[in-house]
Amino acid sequence: MTPPRTLFAKIWERHRITDLPGGMTLMAIDRIFLHERTGAVALRGLQAAGRGVADPARAFCVMDHIVDTRPGRGDQTLMPGGQAFITDTRAAAQSTGITLFDVTDPDQGIVHVISPELGIVLPGATLIAPDSHTCTQGALGAFAWGIGSSEAEHALATGTLRVSQPRTMRVSFSGRLGAGVTPKDMAIALIARHGAAGGTGCAVEFAGDAVASLDMEGRMTLCNMAAEFGAMSALIAPDVTTIEYLKGRRYAPPGLLWGRAVKHWRSLVSDPGATFEIEIAMDAGAIEPMVSWGTSPEHSVGIGESIPASAGERALTYMGVHKGRALRGLPINAAFIGSCTNSRLSDLRRAAALLVGRRIAPGITALCVPGSTAVKRAAEAEGLDKVFTAAGFEWRESGCSMCFFAGGERFPAGARVISSTNRNFEGRQGPGIRTHIASPETVAASAIAGAIADPREFVR
Image (cartoon, rainbow, N blue to C red; front, top):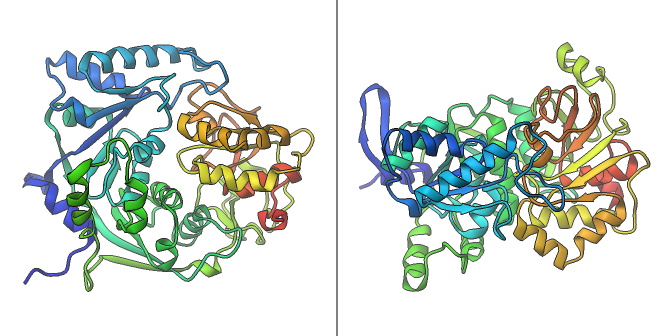
């Protein structure tokens, strides 16, 4: 009799080719995704070695990381030398025959947004990309993780990769989220309690009633933040919600293959009695809107709490705050809604609902950057762009934008920013910029108030 297995173990065994010396395993790779910041490096390295792409149909590339998000954009970026990244990646992708989502492509967008949108990532698949937030895509029941450029080159040439098997962890969220509390708050609460290294070396499976009740976009937000938990990857078992989300998407199995695929996907669950090396239990009902106060996602508290007495001096000094200071009411200079964490249509809808009929506070700079061109089109079809612009937000083209300081665009030095992004370390959004990470609703509410605010107070 086969012993009970975890979801991760089932995917691992299905893709394991052979065990290698040193505790490594040679794994089959189903999908490879590149972006313009590192794509040309991997593809040119492959060409310089005289190798081709083993299966171009399984490799994809997108312009997202340093591409300009201002209206009317082209190849030019504010990053010095950034245009070369775009043109070199374009030429390399075209010469190798892999699928490219170029700057003006109607399917362009952040890699971890467009891959699920198009059905490129599928339950049970292995997917890699040179980006630490590739774990986002595990929300569909895939084993997805971030790699380096040399690993991407190897996978492109061989369709395989040497991998060290991660430990298994299950994080179970019981109960129901309160009004105004989001998957972003779930993730930040987990990291605040168990630390930014709490999931190091693990494949984390998110489970429990609160997770099962999330829509797919919420699940992607939760898995996205596993990177900030230190995890190698994150997974959520596919269910009816997953299957309905994927149905009819461009790269989903067509025709008779769909039924066969669904039958297989339904088996991708952790068996009753399956053992995880680490188990964590969280009460979703006890979580409130979360905001970071320091320079790590673990430096976070509930919106009604104050900066703890245990806060480190370096983080306090950089952020310009002090122990015991309440976060609610702390003045801000700017607000940013976007990133692979919180830039999907549901994120924009929830933020816009708070902004209808309201204006951001005087002196606040606010931007909304959709996660994909498809999200942008859908939002505009619903009139969300007009809600954002009427409230005082800039409405942008899709891309990573000011999630990080790479595209050359930045807020003024020393600015205090409330942001729906995933990282808040020193200089993440530019030299000297102080970033407070939170949900899109909290960002919108804070932009209106001109200070960090509780989004629940703005719900009509």
